Length: 364
Image 1 (cartoon, one colour):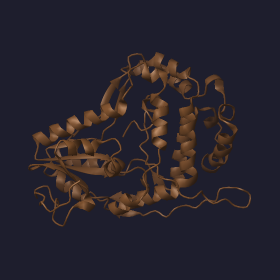
Image 2: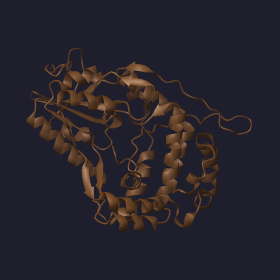
Image 3: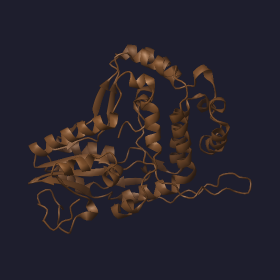
Image 4: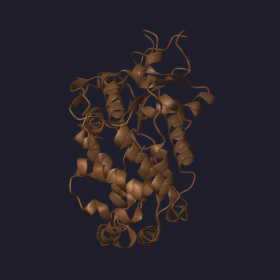
């Protein structure tokens, strides 16, 4: 979802990561001098089918959900044939759940806020990471930064959460993985061809005082949650890139069973989100119970689509569909909806929007 690292990242950078962080593998091998050995994973390329669609149904109304994955192999093209068939009959298309932050500023006023936003990205007083991080954390950061970002000195002045996210992006790029640019453009093209528009399901929150909000954030000191996020992201970069690549490959070739068999994602993203939303600047502006409010907004949109259309289509993180930590699917099941994953559908069950699932199909 859009707010995985919290609304401050959205406000400051204008883009929010949606990366899938995986469970730990054995540490990356070191050479005799203690340097990281680059063990680049092998990634699939070319045209790939992606996973099948989840199926949510009640009576003769069906919602098909595409589970999205980030990052994905950089050199794949997604074959959207199954999605095209659904879109040919869909009456509603829903976007992924998430958070939208509106600062309500005009263009020229927004330009005047850019210097404030840049300052908010930096450590208070111009301190560098070696001054604000515990020595053991900085000792882990430095070789990874040198490996993936070279001699970039500017990143050393940025707040730990922002710096470590930039390191994570650089590590993905080095591993030939990409965030975005695979599924989104294909979906946009298919929707345009059919004259369809995706309805937003995001929770919309507004900042009435963007300049003061930035000032408040700049004044906040480093918190334990910041260090937890920083350390957890280093864990991912040090240990999990092979597993992340394996997940990306499994999504690309449509192997839902393999995705399901992989250990659940580590709590790195939750640590980072906690660090952002627990900021006093966020809490005093009503940014509380964010996950529950996002879920309720999405559920309301889904029920409206299912009630009004025989066939609907939606996108959602495949992690949410596989593990349902936030309770999206459990909430639908409690309301009497039948939920089927692609690898749970029997032959002929749900293969096209016009077919009604037989009673023999597995039900969650």
